[in-house]
Structures are given as structure tokens and as C-alpha cells.
Image 1 (spheres, helix red, strand yellow):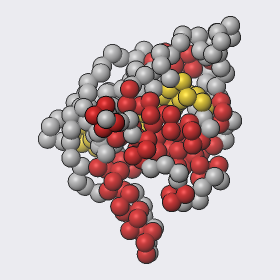
Image 2 (image 1 turned 180 degrees about the vertical axis):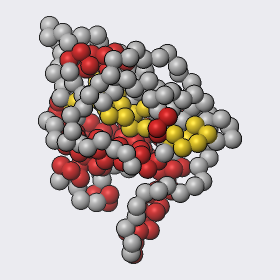
Image 3 (image 1 turned 90 degrees about the horizontal axis):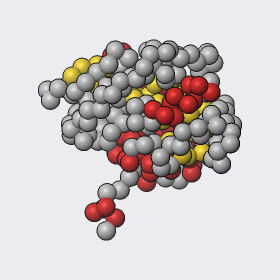
Image 4 (image 1 turned 60 degrees about the vertical axis):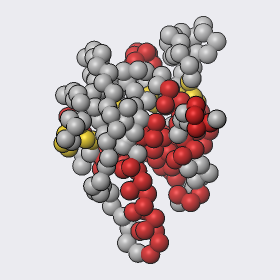
Length: 250
């Protein structure tokens, strides 16, 4: 399992297509990252050095390492395949989509932004994201009817739904679609995103990669909320967002 400019305007309406999702679920393997990302860095002093270090650290998490499978939906986010046959996602598009997602989220009632993860490695990142931003987490099995059946005790009417994997979190995606709620999804190279409104292309299988994506998204949301002005004001690190293995906790 791995750890790893075309962006739609945040003001534009989000639309959905109507094709069915696939059942592909290929888990990639470890892959080292060595090249530099095309992210713009401000010149001068310690800021440039800190930004450069952050970029290197982000790449070291395997955030851009996909699976051996690609779908037509994700082709636009893939730059190449590595020697092991894993597709490599464009980190510049990942960062740009995180920026667009943060703008969109910051305009919503944050308590009505629902975030869910059926993947075990996504649970701690979701928990920490919601703790910092005030979004609402949905843990455990996603109960059918959560977004569509008002008689359920945990029924909610979200303004935005964020999923860790559009395949693993398929029920949440389907219900959001039926309810007309925009869906933001962290999507790997093998995901079908026909019912997703905003794709964040990234490795959604690795625990370090997921921690990084949710940390970056939380950081941008907090900046747009005016809660922080710089990375140094983040109360949690990427490591805090990472799901720990049993042996690491003992």
C-alpha cells in the first residue's frame, strides 16, 4: 500500500454527470518521490526555505502516487507512469484543486460540510480536519438515508459533502447526488468520478498521503476563514493527521 492549469472557477455552478461508478480497487505499492513540484514559491529569506522544505515533505508522503489502473475520468490529472507501472498524478493540479475546494468550503456554513471516510486510513485525517475547521464528520458505516431520510435520528442536510474515496464512500456520493448536494472527492488514478463535482487528484490509499491532503485542505480553509495567516499558526502538524498503526501506539 503506498503512502504517497486547468481549474474550474469557484464561483461557477457545479454540475454532475450520470454514469455509474466502477468496481476497480487496486492498491498501489510503495514508491519513492524525487522530482520537485511545480508549485510557485515566494522568493526571499526563511519563507522560501520553509516552503521548499514543505514541498519536499509533501512529495515524500506519496501523495501523487496512483495505482496501476487509470480511468478516463482521471487521465487529465496523470503525468506519467513510473517504472513500477504506477500512474503519477500531477501535484500542481492537486494543490490547485485543494485551493479551489477551500474557497468553496469557506463560503458554506462549515457545520453543514459533511466529511466521511470508509477507508480506515482516512478516519484520523477526517477527525482532525473537522476538529480544526468545524466541519461535521461521519464515522463508521454510512447509514443509508443519512442525507435523504428525515425520519432517521442522524439525518442531516449538508451543503457540501467531502469523501475520501468516491468508490469506498459510494453511498454518501449517491445520496448527495440525489439530494442535489455538491461532492468534493479525493480521487486516485483508478476512480470513477462521474458523480463528483470537484476532484482532488491524490493517493487516497496511503495513510501519510491522506493525512497530507486533509492537512493542506484544513490549512487553506482556515486561512480563508481568517482563523490563521501562516502555516506556523496551524495547531496540528501533518503527523497529527496521520492514522497510527497499532505498533506505533504501543
